[in-house]
Image 1 (tube, one colour):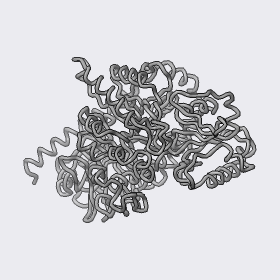
Image 2 (tube, helix red, strand yellow):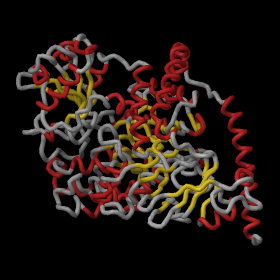
Image 3 (cartoon, rainbow, N blue to C red):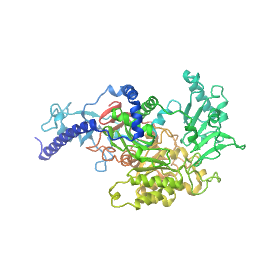
Image 4 (tube, one colour):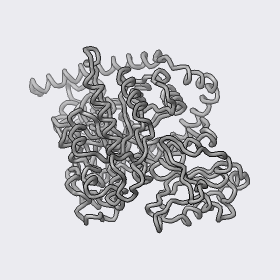
Length: 639
């Protein structure tokens, strides 16, 4: 016999389930008809490649069947419950109910939450109590299937990376230099790569590209030169382009230098490094990299699909269910949109459109909201204010402490950047700007403050969520101003632990106080979204979680000891978790759809074999993903 309150709850559940079925029928109809007008540059490309693309997508889908073979061995029912056992935990990231004993999933959504006893009473239990009177139709005949976490395990909302580069990660997945510690090590890795691929070995015209070198880690700390790549007979004479770990410099071979002749004396917003005789050394910084890009062949659709498959395979294996792609070119947008239309996106993407064009390009990109069954969204643009700290390209107010000849680079001229921010703001695009140095952050905050202050009665109704990507080095006043303006600070915790060995030498003891200042930003009211910037850093979000709460390297060290580098800027575990779930969802206008395990939201869930909210910090680095779930379906692992 059920109480009146239980009957009322069951009635509400039946009503909610009926509404959900109606919504799904409506969504199916809308999805069939939904083909938003596509701007001409993208539409033309799609028409030209439609037949080839259909074949490639079919290959890609087949690839994901193989990718998910572990998941297919343990398929989940359309309706099921995930519950804890003693020693396990479900973290909801919902302030109204931070933890739950059970959550109920129906199709792609979470539909109920509560104690196991209450959920069994409302839904029935297929394995114990059987069906119950008044249960929703999906469990009325036999009860609900219950699955349980093992002791020590923990479930969370699916993790989000709020700043990453999907195709770039895939492109350099087969040849990554990030773990090299010397120029000789790089040459050896390139040699092994070429020798293992006959199609490259036998074609000296084939471009070789990779990512990840970092001169700060090599003996002497000097930039490499083109001549280094000529010391090995296998490498000599080949077109080789190697991106620095931050993506803001190229190291190229002599063959590339020959292809680029004659080089300009100067490049606005960039640097061509030269020796004492004025000859180019093979290092191109920031805007000078465009000279190299003009010579390298563009990616084909087949290549992009290969890169995408590799990136998503690794992302799902590390518990990522949502990625903000932080510099989506027009061809990449076209590629992602095509996958969404074919139902071939196994992960959620939020795109930040980017173009190197000097004139306003907002009318050339589609506005995609809830596209492909909420797998794809594009409502933001990515602009670039300056370069990177590692190559002295971050735009600083005062000269560098370890290089007084420079204050860094304005990758986009201040007036051009300001005009872009104003125009994109007026056209209701979220504006996300790469800012590393304190001058870049100051100039962009000036622009944001101006456009937000000029809102008229029409624009006041819009929800602006402009972002600073990296927010790495700021004055104390600008740390306050970021919060006062409500600007989202999109930060990458592993950047701090990667840079801490040299950052203070580069910035000096005063400016370093405003660098990587996450806790100060948060206390000043700035919303935080956490990411990795992969492939600049590793794709595993737990590396960022660990760095955020410890500010230590992977061996547990820092320049300030085992308490962490400027430990007052550490985030709590709850703050870090929020930044990679609900905070990152807010930064993409998705907080009503994902980011917490709340009834009504999409069932994106990650299950870990250890509870990262409770284990020792060092054990976080040993934690493995047991299962990744997107829209209620298992896409990696098993339960």
